[in-house]
Image 1 (cartoon, helix red, strand yellow):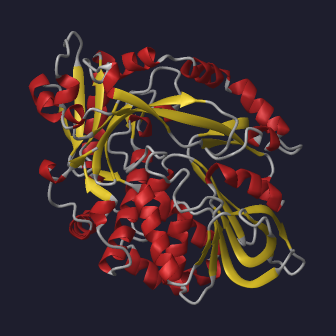
Image 2 (cartoon, rainbow, N blue to C red; image 1 turned 90 degrees about the vertical axis):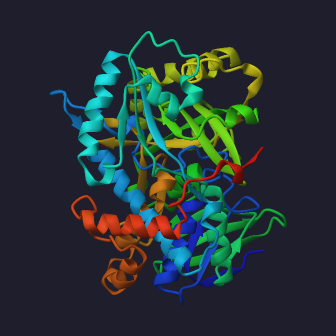
Image 3 (cartoon, one colour; image 1 turned 45 degrees about the vertical axis):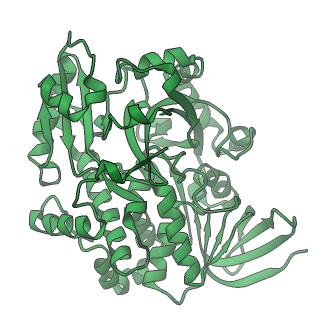
Length: 503
């Protein structure tokens, strides 16, 4: 039986960090708007935002070497690192506003201070890291960064990595103590709890099967209750598709011109997780290395301390995998059914261009546990197989589209697709995703509600004091914001090991 429900202003598809962020922003800006959320799983933050599915956990460009590239003249391009760091600062300000106004509580349940480090081996890489350090540390956003090639200093910073290492080649690292570890699963659940308390209608176990435009310009969704099987029709003035890898299919169903000539390539990830509390206790940082030559950006190896359910964990990876599913809970036919007449040439062009990526994925899938342990031993020389288990991370669907670089270009990043009148928006892509969610959702608001932005600006500036301002160019404001966010998010004191419960 079909019932038509027409009194919804906004529909959010997917109960992940993006919908949680957009819903929270809109509820602060226009509390009177009705918002409905549809999530096909039984609770919030279970796919890409889940803490075991999401490896990013605080991308601020403090340690990720793929955000700084070496130009032909040998200088380092830090523009992407600046952009991502400023976007992460926006997230920190918004979370601080939520804590200050008691919209969420207990920041330590989702964010903790944790050093971010880059580590490299070999003359060429050490030269690169030193140049990178010099370029970044002259910038107000990165001025806390330290650099060392001294094995004794590195032993202090990363004892687990340095212990028993034969130093037959140069080694160097950078460190920023004010980095963070963010549990986006916990944060997503907190945000949905407070949205529920503000009368946002959140319907779990409901999947959106179709979406189309009505003659009066509204969006109509066919939504199935997965328990009863009943299908209802819901209409809204604005729809946000934030369903992770599942967003592409729904965007295609919308039929908007902007959905044409876009494809998706799914990549899964595998992490190794340490099951030995004594080993976990020896490491306290996020340490990023350099991707191997020819490997894609999402394969940068890193050894991460994580805090999940107040337990300290240690993860290493990622190892890439392949499945045609667009979500962990998706269908084996997801990739095939995403190929349409309007994007088939785009997809074929990408296939021809990305033979090296295909080869890389095949090699990764074929790795044995011992071969993966060998890669881990580049970070932890004395790693023992028995101490490590595998965790399958969430699916990431990399966007494929036609760009100035040619047909079928694989995009590594986050993309927002909106139609001409801003009545529908879809989020596609992957990293740095969650860490820059607030910035990305503010962009959605600017694109989709331009008629309200001026009226909303004072409230946006209350939530994000740096809104519309470059922090890099305003060191005093940057200092103020750092002090405020450290205080409100309880990041000013170092984590004390005795407070941790080991899993």
